[in-house]
Length: 142
Image 1: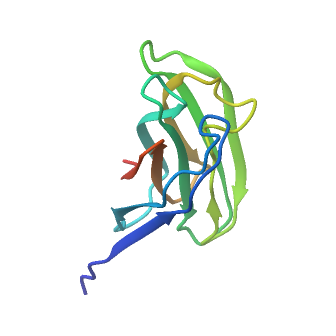
Image 2: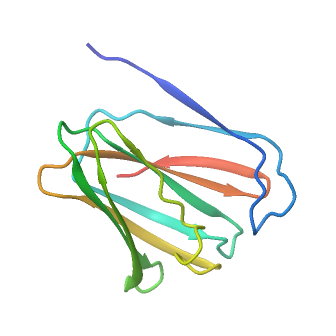
C-alpha cells in the first residue's frame, strides 16, 4: 500500500552566535523516505557560510539493529577530506542531530559536502536543515 506524507517543521526563534537577535519563526517541509540506505551524500553543509547559512542534520536509524554512523566532511571546492568527523552508535528508530555550527567542528565561513555512512548492514534516512537570518529550508540526503 502506498502512503503519501508531508512533514512540516517549525523552527522556533533562534539566538545563535551568528544571529544574536531572536529570529522570526520559520517553517519547512520535506518528503518521507521509501527505505533507508547505508550511505547518504549531502551536496552542501555549512557553518555561517559565505551566504550566511548554517546547517544541521536529522539522521534516523531505520534498521533493526544499532549501527555506527559516521559523518565525514569534504572541502566543497577541492573535495579534500576535512580534519573533522562526527560519529555515534545509533539505536533502531533513534534520532541523531549533528549540527555543523557546533563549536570546534567546521570553522565559521566553511562550506562543505558530507557523506554519512553506517556500519555494515546499517540503514539510515537523513534530512539536512538549512537556516539563515530570514529563511529556513530542508532537503533529503541522497
